[in-house]
Image (cartoon, rainbow, N blue to C red; front, side, top):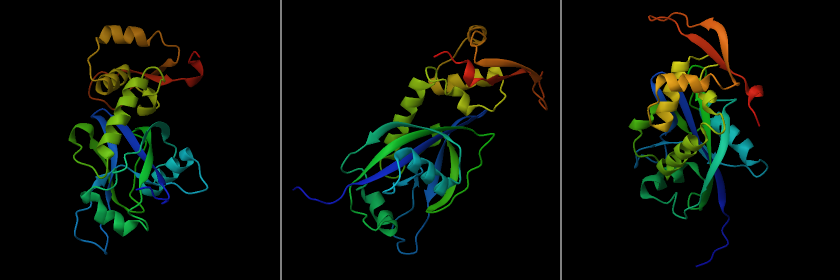
Length: 235
């Protein structure tokens, strides 16, 4: 049957964070509502409907800030998800009815992946996020809606663009060691690199700048620090 019901459009943000313990994803926990205690609030990606007067990227930035208080995050659109049944699962219906004026409407969502260094960002829950947390990728359980599928798509995009788009540096502190850079590549690409060959290749990159500084406050021999110079990337 064909209907004339309006289609809702949303954005969902898959924010990856990295530190020396590995790659993590930012999840919010749905706030329990007073109207409905029949279902357990679930974890989900930060996302919400866009406003009529805003663009997609503007919406992604707003939604991420409203739910997690994060600003200035590198965000990039990667895929659209439009399964007609993506928000109709029984596990999601009760909670949706408590927060949406039209919970039965079909929703198409545009996925954005975001990249941050965990050393520099401290999320805080707001709006309908009861809490917010960094979760190790290997420990992510069932999420609300189709958010496991969205997370998988974002990971595929990150892996394919890590080298070609020079986005690895968005996940590192402003000053980093080559061991941190190699560790990031190994975690994201899920493979090991020979230390000597990796460093040899990195030192050929004009946009990786050696600094006259070393690590401080470490128990081992301090390593040299490097920085990323976006202006040195060859077009």
